[in-house]
Image (tube, rainbow, N blue to C red; front, side, top):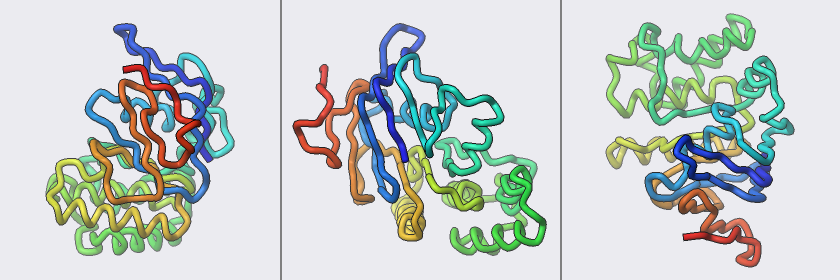
Length: 227
């Protein structure tokens, strides 16, 4: 499903973010954790194709992201749901239209698209908010709207960058319950969080851009940690 091999990412000031020989299998629920600056968001951006590795290969869903054309990357993203930390909802479109926009871009017919949007709004508890604009929603509702847009195209892989950030305890719990439901339906889930959360079957901890802990591998397989 995901395979990073010999990956190096250099920031503009010369430091490196390195993840070596990291594999995530189909059907896993992975929580990538670490302090601010540990490399979590960069790691996620490598998987979305927003950033390119300076060295090594990033393979997701059978594709080498470093060699994809703009069209190839767009096709890859149709199979990948992404919940951005800043949500990135279209402010001039309703909640339903935000979700439906993804299906329109994928060429899904109107009747099927309407059915899918209705289902994800029910799944995210937004069935009565479909007519609202993002600015009319609470922070929790905006996060659920972002989740609805990410899953409406039935992605094989869901990437979520700090999905519970800024939410109260109830909102965070609702988002986590949603991710668990998607995982139970067969979606591979990878999320980031500042601290390990009671989610998933695998925790990967990053420290200074290196894998400090991976509960999905034997300790003898851990990447060396350079403090």
